[in-house]
Length: 248
Image 1 (cartoon, one colour):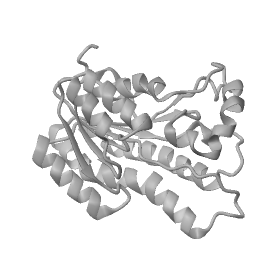
Image 2 (cartoon, rainbow, N blue to C red):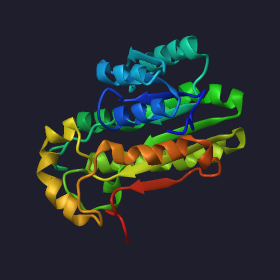
Image 3 (cartoon, rainbow, N blue to C red):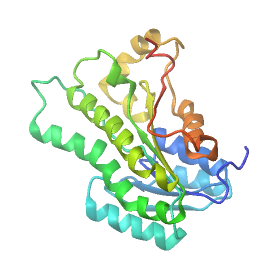
């Protein structure tokens, strides 16, 4: 590893497992200390970070709730004094037809997939502005461009993630803060394995230019690039990391 994030503190939501965990471990290997916001204790993630010689901090946090996010931000500031990097990974992706989606379903998925990115950014942008340096990387999804049924609420949140990223980048560029988003394809995680999405694995892999299913490690290089000085002049962009699912 190259220590590209040496001296940096990265806040990562949803890092107890899946994509968030993979990014946390890669960032720690690159020299960053890691603060994790999740509802599930990230025991294995923290063990890996510690084994890499970096500091790990965790506070149980519902990232869709303003009070929880405020408490988490205060704790991170008390522990590290600042946060240089924010990776918004937390998200849910239930399969339901439009007729089955209730208003409560709609509000819940927006609160977790969209409100969390707003709240976390609100909490950590002031510290980034004070240092005139910051990196925010949001997660969206390649499904926004694809014709997949039973995802009206999910696709709507992913569109919101892209819009939020583009608009926020416009406001923060003058302060040395970049804001970008990564769009993965369907990723093999414990959560997708246990859901109806697992039935789509073969079809999704076949539709891609790279004909294998994506795993969390496939996203860590892109996240590292966008979080580092290498991407100092890249902002407001959506980077598909999807094996060529989107290639038209």
